[in-house]
Image (tube, rainbow, N blue to C red; front, side, top):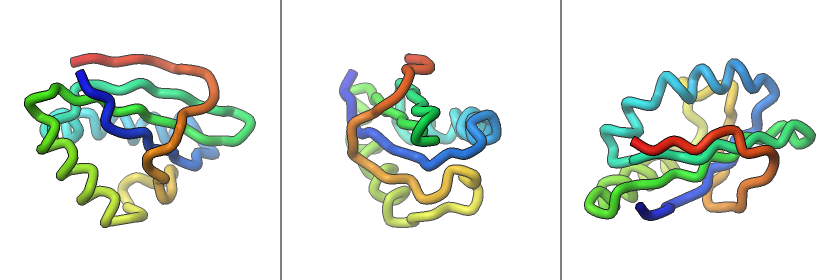
Length: 99
């Protein structure tokens, strides 16, 4: 496993954001992602996702991340807003998932 990136989302409504996040699981898997660690900082109202990828899918996942970053704010990801990439996670670790 290789950790490839940390994404920060401004999240006022964590349950609503979490539902959208979970709905996109299959999309992440199809683009090479093999799992994630999820953190939430209640005080800052921020979710942090540390994405992981299998080594043989690293190029596919990097390409997916670059496309995602280039698109900026995505309508279907509301209420997460514009995600910030490549930072250190804060808050309580919610889960660690491996596929």
